[in-house]
Length: 303
Image (cartoon, rainbow, N blue to C red):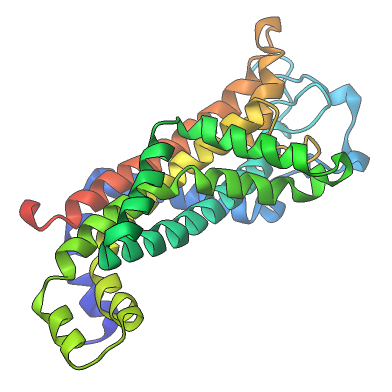
């Protein structure tokens, strides 16, 4: 039997096929990720190419309303940019920042969690106290603090060049604690099992035991956390950009689009902020539903 056939007959694949919610959420998430990743080909316009903008097309309503034009299906903003195209380009940036910050959080959190749970003692106490301190602050406050410190330490002309790296770092440092605590708990259980004791007896180094033996057995909860954390990271990025401390205005993300659009919300141009907001809600909802399904699918007590 091929690897693909074995994967199709696995318990997780069967659980996925039996869950209409998981199938629907995965389809929505994949369509949005694909559209964002290939925005240059999917979007009908390049909203950030100044040569293609026409101020006569500014503030056009969606195509189905009076005054709308079919080439601007979701309308245009105050500068004549196509809202649908801007959403795709903005979502690409938001997803890239969210994914990068989640990867960095996983690397940092899993590494510290393994070290804390396996070594124990003062190392464990120190890392857990750092986690306790981090948990006493809201994630968005930690991200704002890190972003503010970086902006104060760097010269003003370098802000736009390092904005993405600072944003990824700020979101990652506000989200690694969950991985560290989860992996530490799993490591405390795994390190007392017979296969770890046998590896110690035959002289396997602690680093090899942690990376080759313990780590593969603690990745299940990390996978679930990582799936849900993608949605949280995208929301955090959108919040920071909405507050004006995220990405540069020249390359707006979903949060920047929402912030720009809310200035025109009460003047009747509701589509400028409503549609980016709906895109953000739809993506976060689909990823959260996938995370809920994955949590149940990986829980042997629910099989």
